[in-house]
Length: 204
Image 1 (cartoon, rainbow, N blue to C red):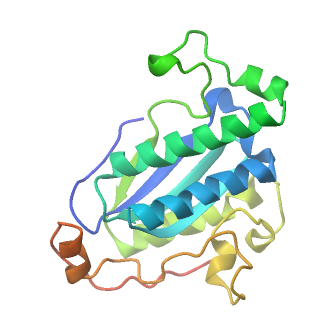
Image 2 (cartoon, rainbow, N blue to C red):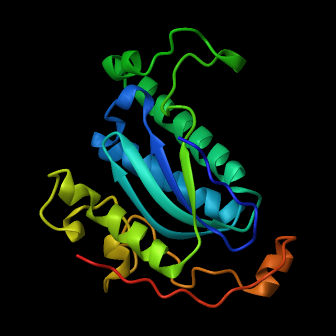
């Protein structure tokens, strides 16, 4: 799929990552937690706004607004670090059948023999509040459409419950309610510009 990747500051990106050969890596709660850990660790080291996400068995969606580098940098960090952690877990736990499904036909650069993600993830810039809300509601309803649950609040591995009243630690990762960067924050990140705050609306 063609990538629409703007380098403008305060740009929201709708990202789709698909697992290698559509292997259902994220049927495992351990794999889901490892991916969420990478989202959190990356946000701490390379600040970005997490507006929404969902993990499905064979793919993931996210809406992000990065301050540190481009969306390509964000993708490289998320894809690379999550793949490393998930493959290490599969090896350590002896999940040989899963590893076999993720094995590459030919070793890649740096002698990589396995892959968690397909190449060429999809990235679409979201330029309006309406489009952002539409994509946020779409990803939250994804598990319902797939028959994995009856209501989006029942699906642990999405940001839906983070928008509902909850206690600290009750959701895998918190979202950023102030989804735009302030001008002074962008200057710290060696960028410039500013936009009004975004109020997101959860449907379900």
